[in-house]
Image (cartoon, helix red, strand yellow):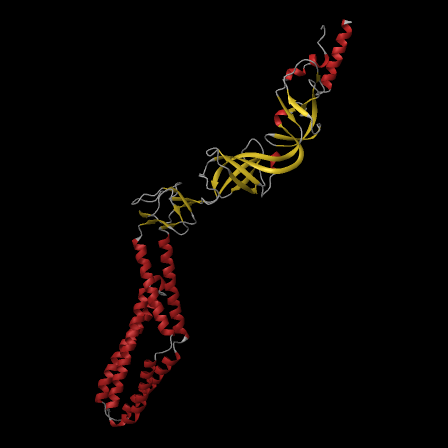
Length: 467
């Protein structure tokens, strides 16, 4: 009889090992640690990862010029707007050069405008009067100078002096421009030669007054009168027709050179100024008034965009397949545990992260606008909602046992007053707290947690050999 009991016990033990989860506990009081009724419910599948708060933009600002810091307009932590002046270097020489270039440009613009504008009515009238006087002077040239001839000579002298003044003004404007923009030595010589010719013409016109006053009649006087008529007619035509193409092109080149000089002076001065490239906050200020800007890795200033923050999450390869742009994210900040912050997946890397022991991919989360006191570098735990299911059988994870060798999942079902059975189940989606059971249990069944020793072979099949 004893041998029969031993054989029976071994057979049942083998069956219990070969068919895990079928052991049935009967008789005796078994303590129920926790219980749960399986009913259809909604389920949210989630992926959890950690990261740190980063600004959407962060820019290091440095000067392109070396000089002592003249003025610092901001302090670390100040809010700035795009285009705000932040700091200046000592650059008085460059500012003076810019002012000189701007003055030269204004003078060149005046000269160009006076050349292309229609002639003034008073100038045309004077030129026509000179022609009429020259015509009238020819018949009288054979009879010695008349009062009219003397007056004509005086008018010609006045015109010559006016021409000299205009030529001198144009030369002065030319030399206001920097040497590198004046067209070379040849252009300088041309300007000086023009002034010399105008001075010579003025002297000749002045001398002509005296010669006219002393001249008598004769062929020479008539020839001079005719030459004067030709000169006045040419002067009138030039006035009416305006500058020729050569004159206009030369002045346009000088105007372009003056504009270029201003632009270059502005660029040079800009290298001594730091402006805010966008709205944000000054996160670093390494400048000291009166000292040179920092050299090396330290920036002069750093600006961050505090209007938008993001977090980069390391997502495991088994979870990244369920992550996609547009999914909502809930973030819990270690420094602000009571603050609710939300965001959205905006980008997922195609390649895995380097230098990591596991295969993970980077997912970027852009935070939604919030009034929370968020700071760059704060640690956060992000929960990504990947799927929402309705009317599925959901059980808390604490009721599920997974065999480490076979990876088979089990739950313990209570059947009757004191009968318990551990049965295999098939799991679907899971999150940190719950699992979806797709097969193995039915709605309304009661699953429990009981001490593991309650499933000994003693309870399942009677006592061991010899009992």
